[in-house]
Image (spheres, rainbow, N blue to C red):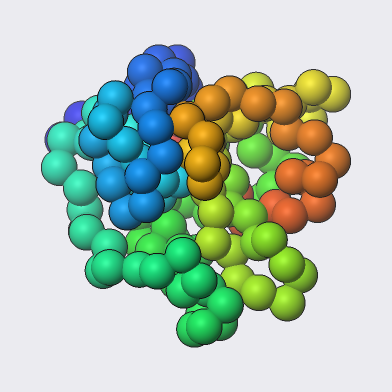
Length: 151
């Protein structure tokens, strides 16, 4: 495992997944991934083996369980930060509805304070892409994390 990574390392690793088709529960660059699979793949690219493997999950797991499962897992391996402090290379977690837990993740490719901030994510029915963090996405941000190692 690498002792430290730079924000540039994170961005290079993340961008290498662009174009990977969306496949629920997958994490294979070029073949398929979902949003969590993208994050898992970037972790592997940076650090080697994954610190834990997620249990099987359905597309509606957050709606059914109403637990902050994604946040809790992120907190075991990433460092939680204030959303306003998120920078390029940090991880954002989103909740699609205000009363539900976070169930989507993306990696910032600019600072969140940038007027035209961008993220890379895998979204259902679309390949991994870099997109603008428009207001609709900003309103859904629930948590922010950075990779370990003090980047």
